[in-house]
Image (tube, rainbow over all chains, first blue to last red; front, side, top):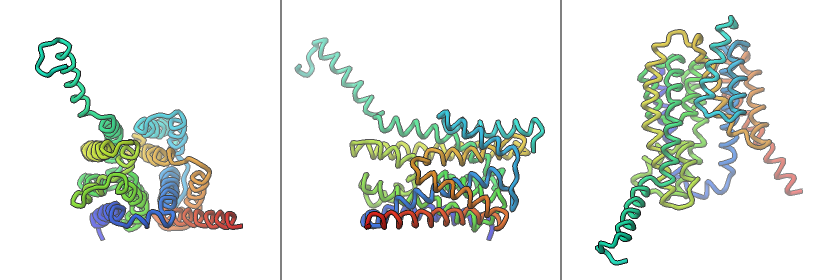
Length: 103
Length: 249
């Protein structure tokens, strides 16, 4: 299947999940701890994606300027910087690392 | 005071009444929704740029923002594709990350009581920002206004800035020189950070990070993210059962 197929499938899935929230009976929300599991899954996925983007390249782990970006972003978040500033700080840290010759 | 009187006091009262009406167009909920929309929309630029860097074309990038319209899942999708993962793995990661929107949907249904024909529109605009803005209001009408202001506002800004970012990303050339791969790392950490409240959340994040590091060399690209999600859910389930056992004892 082409990338387009997956783009459209993923978009359809995202919409159906949102829609399901409105259509499922209230008892579903009340009975199992759905909210709690969804929050846990979200944290797990975001943590995994952070690590993957910071240290993964294909099937190998590499330490390069992206780790500087991770560190710089953490500092910015610690200082309560707005999201867009955090993203820019991450880019600047990685670009700076490469400028001084780091991989 | 009687109506139509030339009494200057009445005129003053009339002016302040008019001002009151003008102010009521911009209620606190609408103001909150719109400021969130602008702040969020701007980082559509980074999504657009990173998506083209990950290998999507401008149209695919814009389709994700218009049709999927949930930032976390969109970043997950391009994160997996950019890391060399398959489309199927990208779909799975994006879909799992979208599960929380289903929960928002349930909460918003109870909170906003939408009319049936409008439910698809409500559903499409159900994202972190609109759910947060709606639930931050006390008054039912304000909740609805907050939802629409944030939902529509983010939708417009997010899509416009995605296009800007996608065009810019295409023009930039080597993304690593500009640190765009570092921007992706920061983008994910920025999404994760506000959710790291309490011991359970932090433990979940540490477990997921550790599993990812172990799994990257062992499994095909894209799969480690899914394994990390599964293990996080497993640990959550185990901790819950243990807590229930303690409560029963």
